[in-house]
Amino acid sequence: MPRYTLTVTCPTTRGIVAAISAYLAGKGCNITDSSQFDDFETGSFFMRVSVDSQEGAGLDDLNADFAETAERFGMDYAFHDETEKMKVNIMVSRFGHCLNDLLYRWRIGALPIDIVAVISNHMDYQKLVVNHDIPFHCIKVTKENKPDAERRIMDVVEETGAELIVLARYMQILSDEMCRTMSGRIINIHHSFLPSFKGANPYKQAFRRGVKLIGATSHYVTADLDEGPIIEQDIVRVTHAQSPEDYVSLGRDVEAQVLARAIHGHIHRRVFLNGNKTVVFPASPGSYKSERMG
Image (cartoon, one colour):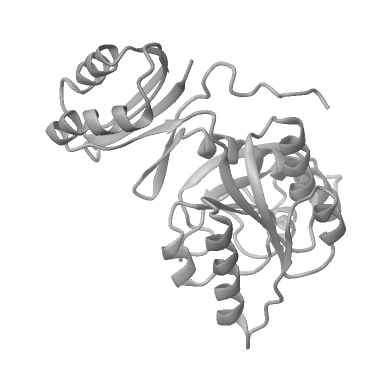
């Protein structure tokens, strides 16, 4: 039975949920999961609905016939086939813990994505990536060649049809132009609990401040460094007896988990941009299952 996800954003008003439910029922669709949120500060409404198409209505039918309802409420909307895996490019430099974690989750089906390329400014992980039958692209980046390097990166994105770029500890700052071009489609992992301790050495900053909790933040990339809308965060407890190196080691696990959860939310259409923030709905039942255990 076909299963689809409907995502909706529009100005908040009464009757939206009733109209959506009536439309889906009329098309022979059974709602299996639904989340909604009214942001009364901005006057925006967000909704995500999973449905089983019990009478065979396809994406084209659902999209076309929903236009009248969408126009009435001023909706931005889309229907998505839940069986289609999002095409993803992963970018990495020399810290491989997030890349290794993503490859493992992808391999066992816990992260249902189609990794169409891995891009790096170093050769460290070429063998690892190629052994997974994934194309590897080494694109060196210097001050002198950065515009050309980004053009080559965007060529890979276009050639592979990637819908999402994941910065898995890619230690290069992207240009404003690339951030605008891929707005809402680049996810980064920052080794700090933003908005605190920004920059290149957040663990050292945290150590000097004597914090008792360190964390990681996954966010959408914008032209403002480390200021993009936050998707996911987590923390781990530390003590006065631990060193900056301990912080780094403890932080690795948190970074990998936070990045994976952010990607999981994005690919399942659970994350909605809401100005400089996000709305992140809970996962649908069964969306964390793996095709195999290991």
